[in-house]
Image (tube, rainbow, N blue to C red; front, side, top):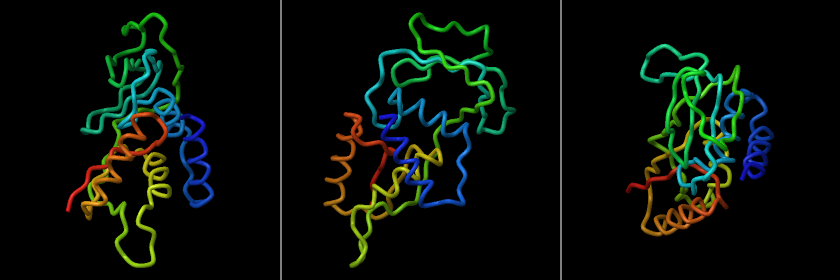
Length: 173
């Protein structure tokens, strides 16, 4: 899955030469893809510890410097000052000095399915890499037909097996 994410990011860079993705976001996305903690993935049983990372408080609080974040399965198990947080035995430890983590973003108004005559109906191959590259881990499609819900279910199955990287997609009508 990490190789797939790298290829997706390369396509994004080719399509959007003006968009320079920060090393911090790329590192976090590669870590998440490797450990399959994206919205619909099967959790990796090996614990992951990011040490010396800066945690961004999106609720408006100050950023927390030099933190350790431990992921077990597909959940953040604990976070706190480096040196005070115990890293599980056998965990993959990544020194994230100079890197940042923050919660995944949701885009609440997207049109993943196109319902006009000459545009392809399924554009997820173009959209999903862009969402992930920009930290969007969930989206709400604003025009989802009954047929589109079948596609959504297929995407969820593919995400669960790790064959499709993308945000969690919810449909509406």
